[in-house]
Image 1: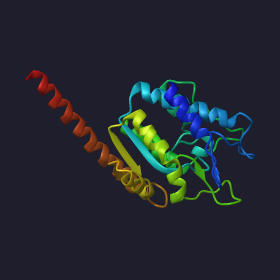
Image 2 (image 1 turned 135 degrees about the vertical axis):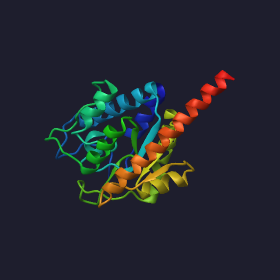
Image 3 (image 1 turned 30 degrees about the horizontal axis):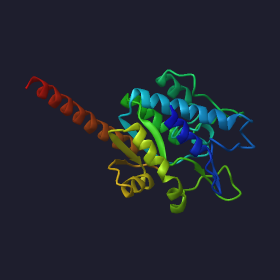
Image 4 (image 1 turned 180 degrees about the vertical axis):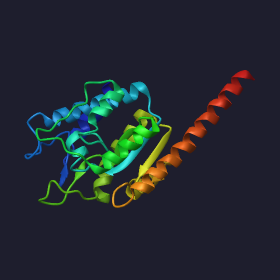
Amino acid sequence: MKTIDRFLARLAAVQLENVFNPYRDICPIHDHAESAQIRLQSLRAYLTLAVQQGVDSIWFGRDLGHRGGRRTGIALTDEKHLPLLAARLHTRGIRKATASEMVIERTATVVWSMVEEIGQLPFMWNAFPLHPHEAKAPLSNRSHTRGELSQIWSFNMELVDVLKPRHFVAIGNDAHVALANAGLPCSYVRHPSYGGQADFVAGLRRIYSEHCAANRTGALASQLELID
């Protein structure tokens, strides 16, 4: 799809100081020459199939982590869970990009346990879809700045326009504030890191219980309208 190709070409061209762009940059420690291109291909497959199959929810995290999305190019997904995403989408276009051994990320593990429990595959993204790191410490994690977020926010709005989800879930305060400031109504759930796992799990269970109930009510109303 031309829209997706244009979106990805612009995303892959982004260069910011102390920010690793997994669709453009090569990690000298863990990558090989084709790693960035593989990550870009994985995101292309993910986006294309999401558009084709439809998206009910987008889960927004804060930014890519050095053990997860920096390596895979897929938000909230580490290399252990990358094959689960590929299997859910029935594609071979999503694959491991790094040259080093598989790395597991705690956040991705908790997130994917809830994807499996809920039984629905959301589209997973981040308010800041790249990996911000400390100066001279490329394998560290830090929060993006307000200025960095403003430079890439148009990508998020374009993604929302392309996917047209019915529901947004903000994972953590930073994602919640970013979505609220953009006027995107969302459900909030605590981030699973730093002792937040139990609240994250309970929050998603509550959200999806309510969301499924609302969907059933909407479906029933549509059926009654057809009868009338």
